[in-house]
Image (cartoon, rainbow, N blue to C red; front, side, top):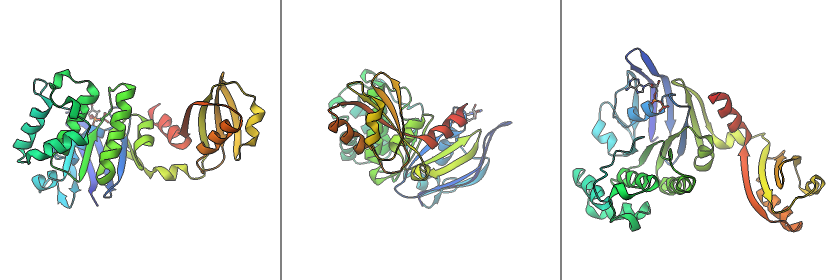
Length: 297
Ligand code: ADP
């Protein structure tokens, strides 16, 4: 077990930010921590990383109690806070070396981390010359310096443009391959893109803790696809498991299948057989989407 959160309650004065929240995260999992703004995500992450105390409950990280053995627990945690605090006047490499020195980490790790997060071409620049996406990479590199087993990332993709968003998502997936990752977001699609499990909190309470594969059971599969030409609906009848085909815009269709088998390759085959090109294709997880809509409205 990498992270064990036991009955955590947090009060800020009169205001209850977390109410008796418990969950465990196993080694190697990438878990999305989802909830609308104000749900208590940042508060929970600050508690797990030992930056603030809880009012009640316990947190165990890598077998150390964060409230009792804080330093030992923090050794296995890399934390990227929501407002990634960077010294904007420092150079990227200088900033990371500074962090490494404070934590008595060998200089070679700085170069390893620069490489790992794809910062090599930017490493000689001042942090204030970097885009938000690259600043996030600097924060991520700083969080990775001591090679922690657990990564806690608070809204790592908020405020990024679509390209940067994809890059940072891929980076999280990549660095998450040999780590336990808990990352918060208020964007449902993010969870589908990165995680194998989702924990949802709302108004300080845990309301869902599920593997993404569980959402997919007994479910309809929805594929949004855009072709380069208009086609007639009857053509889709040749694709197996098709439940409905709705033409929502010109050459764009929403195809619903009654199967959990991944139908994307069948849609590609269909396009190829009919001399069509696919301009865009997205899959949607209906249950997770409806859950999130219900949660945020
Ligand atoms: P999220 O990260 O999900 O947006 P937060 O953990 O930041 O949620 O906040 C949860 C609740 O606690 C909100 O109602 C917020 O206003 C409140 N809160 C957060 N930090 C403080 C604080 N330092 N003092 C008082 N209230 C706070």
